[in-house]
Image (cartoon, rainbow, N blue to C red):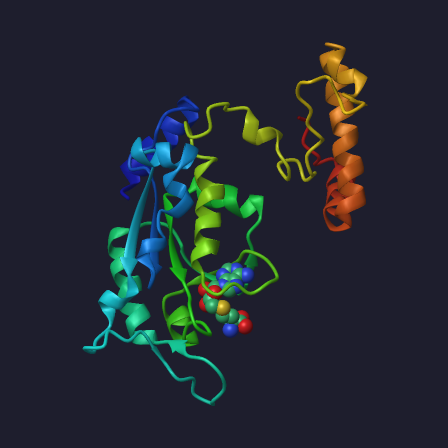
Length: 261
Ligand code: SAH
């Protein structure tokens, strides 16, 4: 992207929350299973946004960059052991092609990576896009990750059979933050993690259900009381369920950095 385009994009975003970016946020996915995309992102809000060019998806089949007639992308690990490893030369060629047509940081979805958090999602959503390398087998030869300056991002502390569901989850989280994708613009700012807290409980009709009533404050029509009740609930739930987040939140608040809603 040129400097001009970058400035124009920035100005467009500052100007109107719903203005689409041009070019749109673009995910460039590298995978040996291109048929897994757009997957669930072809449906619902993300799917409509994709049709409306509010974001773009390019999928490159890593096999197209193999050099032999069997189109092999993997080989046995040096040092022995179970499984196969994705070859550096093949992955390198795929990454070069992705960088030539895509934009944003190159990310390898990997259980060794930095945890995907809402803060990282926001960071990515503010950029031009991301190049997402999906591993299979035991993973990717280390040298190509070093040579191409690839960052590693993890979906969580468990092992998936491939990077594709992680790439889909990352794109899902980013896309819903892009201008114009989620109808109610105020909604993402109210959610879990946005203020370092988990979300307060939700209630809808009927007002009484199986003998359970909706908390009275929510039907009081008193906005300030509702706000305070929700904040209190969010704090209680975070303290109970996520001591790690709670400790962060308290630290930020004590340093006077806690953001007011
Ligand atoms: N041998 C590896 C696991 C390989 S799983 C290890 O022990 O760390 C195969 C592929 O699935 C990986 O290359 C990676 O792209 C993807 N993957 C597995 N778990 C993941 C996670 N928690 N987050 C993101 N990607 C993951």
